[in-house]
Image (cartoon, rainbow, N blue to C red):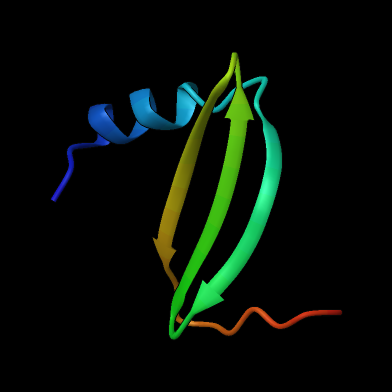
Length: 54
């Protein structure tokens, strides 16, 4: 489990990045970001479904 400070620092690194991917698997949303030549992925477990065209 991450602390609030760790989560805030990780999300702050995404500021200014471009979203380059969005996918899902089971109850996990996956968002890919690219900035400064570096790619990062955010995996978020969520209680809802993400479907194409919604």
